[in-house]
Image 1 (tube, rainbow, N blue to C red):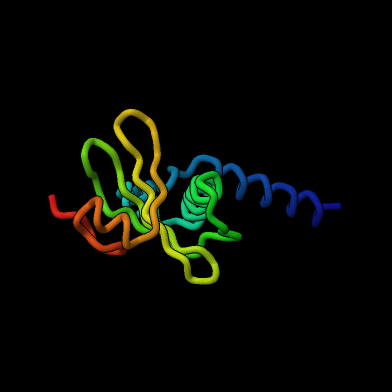
Image 2: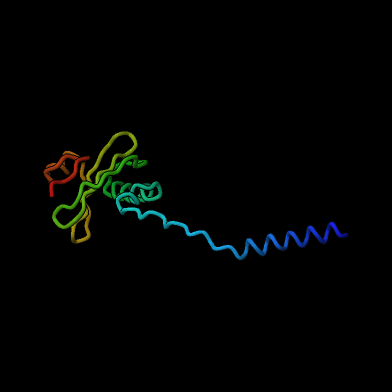
Length: 122
């Protein structure tokens, strides 16, 4: 009985000391840039699915987007490149008025002046 009482007293003393200790100061997580956040897998999957929808709605076959690339801004909109499973690549040009053009890379290059998979000149 005395042994149990000693154990309980020691346990309570240990818990009381642990509760009274100062919390550890943890450093905040490092900030992540938006470009790095865009490279995270969930973002890539969502972007690929959105570009696949645009490609298919324009009448092209695309079972799965396997690579994407943001070329940059052009005429008030954005230009993205997407490669579909099987190797077909498209330039997706979103315009300032909200419309979208899906072009094969050669046609996209003629319109933007820059080949697919290269940054647009600023």
